[in-house]
Image 1 (cartoon, rainbow over the protein chains, first blue to last red):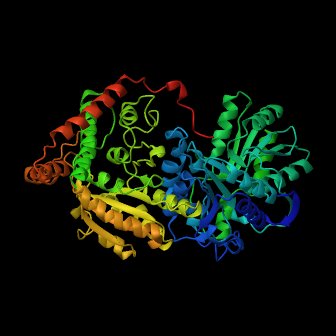
Image 2 (image 1 turned 90 degrees about the vertical axis):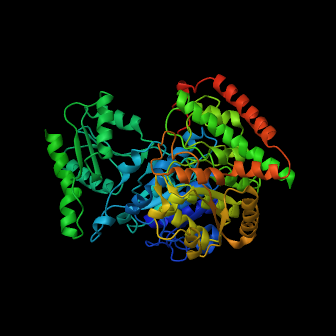
Image 3 (image 1 turned 180 degrees about the horizontal axis):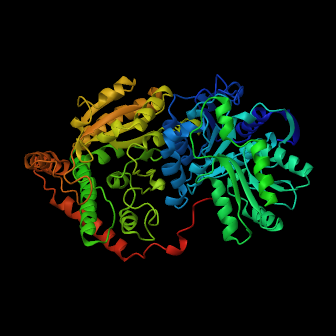
Length: 328
Length: 312
C-alpha cells in the first residue's frame, strides 16, 4: 500500500485502518455485534462488510462467544479483530481476556498464540448511563499478557490499529467515543507498519511533566496552553500505549522538569494507572516532592450531563490543578 | 470387530493406568495441586478421538488427561507436565488443569468451566477461512451446561453454521452436586435442540457406540450442517478432585457405577468371545510405567526461564 494522505475524523481513521488491514492481511476477520451490515453503532465499520464479504460479519449479542471465538480462531492462525460495543460490556466476558487470551502464549511456551485485537470504546458522553460511561483500562492493565492502547487523534487511531493487527499478542484498542466525530484532519496512510508502543511529547516546558492518555489529552493540552499564557510551561507526554509503556520518555521528562510529575486520566484515580506511573517515577528516583494525580473521584458516574461534568476532569479542572501544583 | 474391541480396550487401559499413576503421585507428593481424574470415563475420549482427523482441533476441560492421551499426545511429556518437569508438554506452566499439546491437535484444557466451548467455535471459524474443513471439538461436563459461556458458544456456532462438535460428558455431577439438583429435567440434549442443533444422547461407556454417533454427527458438520451436540452418559469412579471424600455418593451408587464402567464392560465383552484382556492391560501398564519412570527422571522446570514467553 503506497503512502498517501486522507482527510478524516477519528472514526474515519479507524475505518481506514481496518480497511487497510483487511486488504493487506488475509488472516484478518472483523466481527462483533452490529459491525457488518449496520456498520457499527457509531458507524466506525461502515462499508467494510460490502467490500470484504464474509470476513466481516455480525454476531449474536454474546460477548463471551465473541472474545472466546477470537481466542480460538487466533490460536488456529487467524487474526481476528473483534468489537465489544461498549467497554462496560467487556466485563460480561472478562474471562476470555484475562483467563484465556492472556494465558495462551505464556502457558504453552509460545506453541499457541492469540494474536487478536479487541476494539472497544469507553468514556463519558452527555447522558451516558452508569453502565455506559466507565473508563476501564486499569482492569486490563493489571493483566500481564494483554497489550492496551488508547489513542486520541485520527493519526494515532490509524497507526495504533494497524500496529495492533500486526502484533502477535492480544491487543485491546480502547477508543473514546467523544473523539469519533471530531474535526477531520489529514492523516498519513500506507506507511510501513510500526511496532506497538511509543509516546508523544506534545508540549515542552520546565515547570512539570504531565503524563496523560486518551480523550482527556485534549483537555490537558488546552490547560497547558492556558498555563503557558500565564508563563508556566509544562511538558505534556501523551502515552497512548499503556502496555507497552514508554517508561524511558516519561522518566526522562520527569527528570528534566525537576522531578515534578502530574498524571491526568479520565478514569478513577483509585487504583488507576496514574498510580502506577507515579510509582514507577518514584522507584526510578526521579520524583522530587509530591506528585499529582487528576482523574475521576471514587464514585459512580451519573447520567445527567451536569452531574457527570462535576466529577470528570475537564480543561478547567486540569488547569486549576496544574496551576496549584506548579505554584507549590 | 475383535481387533477394534482390543484396540479400544488398550486405549482405555492406557488412560486408566496413567490416571492411577497420577493418583498415586498425588498421594506421594510427586504431583502437587488440584488434579481431576477421568477414571471411569475413558470410553468417551477413545470413541470421539477415533473419529477425528489430524487437522481437527480439540478443546477440553481440566478433566482432560484422557482426551490428551486419546488424541495422541505421548505419555512421558504428559506425565512430566504433571510433575512440573522441564520436559512437560508445557514446560511445567500448564500443570494438570491447563495442559496442551497443539502438535497433536489437542488445543488445551481449561480450568474455567465451559470457557473452552467458544475456543472451538473460533477454531471452526478459522477453518472456514483458511480453506480447511477442520472439525472443532469441545468437551465439557454436565455442570458446564449451566454456564452462559457454553450457551453463547452453541448459539454462535449454530447461527454461523460452524462445524463444531459439542461433547458433554454427563457423569451426573456438577462438581460435588448432582446435576439433577442444578437443572430441571435430565435431558441435556434438549438445550441443544432448543438452539436448533442436532443432538444425540449415547452410552458414553461404549467406545464403539460413541464412535458410531460421532462419525455421523461429524460428517454432517463437516459437510456444512453446522454444529452438533453429543451427550456422553458416563460416570467417574473417583471424586471430583483427588482427595474428594465423595460424601455425596452412596455405596449402592458407587457399586452400580463400577458395574457400568467401560473397562470392565470391554473386558467382559472380550471374555464372551473367549479372549482374555489381561495381556492388553499388562501391555498398557508397561507403556505407562516406562513413561512414568522416564518422566520422574527428567529435570525440573527451569526457574531461570519463568519470565519467558509472555509476549512475542
